[in-house]
Length: 323
Image 1: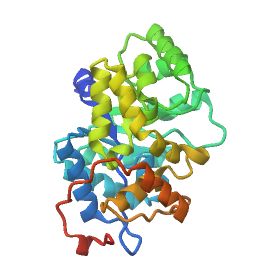
Image 2: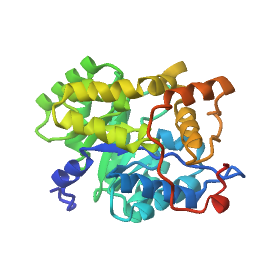
Image 3: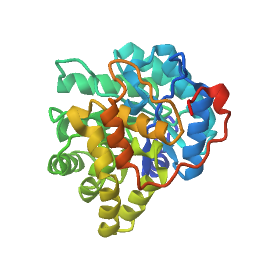
């Protein structure tokens, strides 16, 4: 328990799961379709997903306006209705990140996930200062920095944790399990504070990161087949490598399509699969773009053996999803 009343241990326990990153559906006019977003969040929660990050990268964070980001945060929080822990994505310039973090807190979010700064000249000292400033602005809720750069090592992470008691977890997305295990070991040696390590590269890296000490992973796949993501979690928790490998093989082609071209089609592949299953439109916003006809067929082939999506509880005609 921190001085602000935040129960770190309880929040870490709730975050130790599949952290779903919801897509943001758009209607036929290119606007955020909030009724459909509500239905999609309810679908995830009913399926057993208990942690959600609105305004993550799969949610096209950088393509939304400030007003849209805040509206998405409120819609997801309201739709979850206390049934899932909410970690609102914040970032960009410091004043915007702090303002969005306070909006998330006031909307009932349990934590914020701080996107790695997109400045071309990232300084380790600046990264610490950036995250400390955001954490200090919302001491009542948890903070989860998102890190994909090897420039930030264990020493810097430990200093951040000691300076900001409400940093409860790290979303670590460096595509190297050895680097991850090394950094985690360095942090453990440098600070007495316990933090949760979240494998930020989703199901593809979850097994190897689990071996290195991660006890949660993010997921965009969960938008398409939540049961598969939860099956991976169960296999890892149960120490069943054979089952984890089986799940990994079943999604390998789909995740390959998402990662291809330096992840250029990461969100496009997810939305295309959802479109083919009748869950939402395929449209995205620049700088992302819908898939080509040949790539759509690749998605179709990659999900051919997956279970059909159960129907949504909503009105497709008013929400604008094409048949």
